[in-house]
Image 1 (cartoon, rainbow, N blue to C red):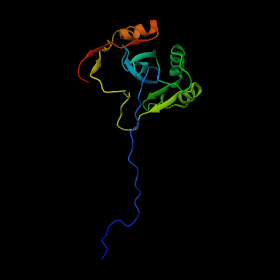
Image 2 (cartoon, rainbow, N blue to C red):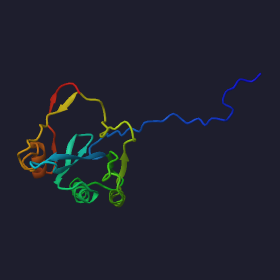
Image 3 (cartoon, rainbow, N blue to C red):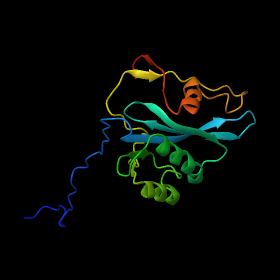
Length: 175
C-alpha cells in the first residue's frame, strides 16, 4: 500500500550564499546612506548624505540637502570620485534598497563611472557591510534640535569638508 504523501516532484533550491564584500585596501569598497535630520520646525527634515570607505572608515563625501533623491547624490558622488582618483572598475559601491539607491539615475551614474553597485538582501535590514568584526564604536553625538543643519554636523564632517577626507573618531567599547 502507498502512503498519502506528496506525489509531485519537489524543486530543490541550492543553499543561498550570503554575499560578502571584502575591502583589502582603501577606495575599493564604499558604502553610502541617507539619514534624516530634524529641523527646528515640526515635521520638517534635512537629509544627510554620507559616503564611507569601508576599509579605512573614512568619510569620502557628505552633504546636507533638503530632499532625498538620486539627483542630490549625483554631484556628491562625482566629487568624491574625482577627489580620490577612482578608476573605472576599481570601486564597488554598497547601499541598502532605498529609493535613491536603486533609482535608474543612480544606476546610470555608476555605470558611466565604471563602479560596481552592491545592494543588501531584502531581509534582514542591514546597511553597511563591514570588512571584519570590530569592537570600536563611533563617538558621533546626537544633533541638537535648535541648531541649523550645518552647525549640527559632527566635527569629523566639518573636517571632511575642509580637507577632503577625515577619519571618524572612535572610542573603545563593545559593539
